Length: 256
Image (cartoon, rainbow, N blue to C red):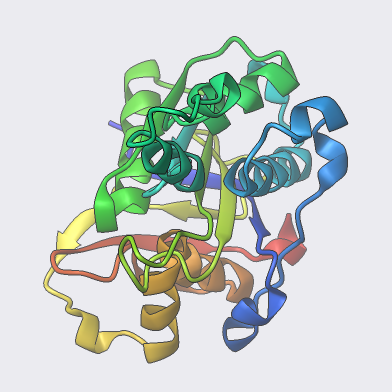
């Protein structure tokens, strides 16, 4: 039985770099060059963020994105597009945009990633409220457990939300990607299978709680900090009880 999941790389895309400053993390802005202009005009902020993070993670891990199965985890997915469509429905005189309808599904980002990388490997799209990142990790774990070996791309992301929907969710946009593997070679860290713990949100830094309440994908930050600081510790994977945790043993980026 596989007891550890190895981290080959990670990458962050956060348009507002100041959000990461309290955690000592660095992220990249959206890389517009990754998506051809004609396609880019049809994509949302969430898709552009997720693809930027995913591409950086694959590059750092020297992984072939054309042959890499993936898991895309997002609480809101294409929330801006879906909201716009819903607001048009009561108006009988307004025609729905076929492009917006096409882009409104939760696996839109996964589809664009597959098209851009000519990837025909399986892809899973997950939404699990506060547990979205933890469930994404468990999904990767389960797939690799069944397969016995290999790599997976895990991307966790959420964009800005209309604030009348569920404030404060959507006040910030954040995306992060990992290349995860059953192979320890060239790994920058390892993770145990996520488990439910007895921790409560009272144990967590207020800066992380506030950011994750407004950008659900920021649940990954304790894990990112442990990787950067090359620590061995138990990290939380969400902010609301029950708390999911995973044990991480990190080597640090300078040992990649």
